[in-house]
Amino acid sequence: MAQDRRGLLLILSSPSGAGKSTLTKMLMAWDASMRFSVSATTRKPRAGEADGRDYFFRSRDAFEGMVAAGEMLEHAEVFGNFYGTPKSPVEANMREGRDTVFDIDWQGGQQIRNSALGGDVVSIFVLPPSIAELDRRLRSRGQDSDEVIAGRMAKSRDEISHWAEYDYVLINEDLGDTFERLKTILTAERLRRTRQPMLNDFVRGLNKEFLAR
Ligand code: 5GP
Image (cartoon, rainbow, N blue to C red; front, side, top):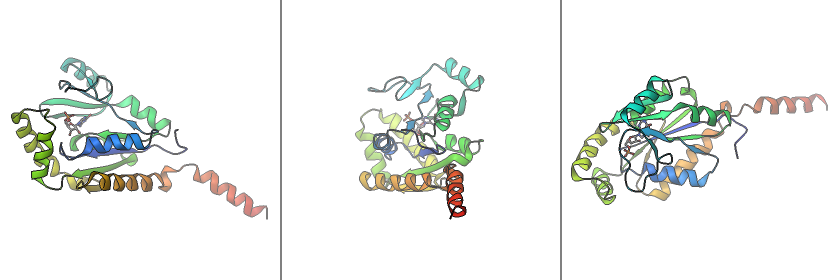
């Protein structure tokens, strides 16, 4: 159910393999009112990925058309492919008071933070406990070739260099613990005064009660 408050934009970034996608899925299962921002990408689908659920898989031409039409909230090149966030679902979520979760890289995070929606952003960076563990997790997925994995490790270093641009940083040693901390952040951020516009009316009501005494 949508809340009687302003929806926030929860941006999760991390090097791939740090556990961000799993944490995102856990969050969506925990709170059905949240909406995952399905990105558009020019990369090919991996086994098990569905168009419209994991990504909108688009040709380079179609992607560039969306950018030219002003339909993207942000877009960036990652691993030689283009990725971008369609704007209209995010705007609809905000109108409905729903929180939106973004699994995007630091470039996307920067663009949304610097946009008109910047005040609605809560950004979290997820770090792996070590680089050896990051390497192990990437290989255990068994989805990518050695060459692709080597490319991702190089990109990881670049991604991690942006950790200090985020509001919160989680070291994902244990998935269950990390998820607990993620829920704590979200719960506190939802309670910010600025995210509860109904407080004005509520306090007005309290004042009426004072006057009636
Ligand atoms: P993957 O190809 O492994 O699904 O994602 C590669 C990287 O692209 C990840 O770091 C992911 O967070 C990032 N990414 C996914 N969607 C978007 C998007 O819409 N915008 C940006 N800037 N990055 C994205």
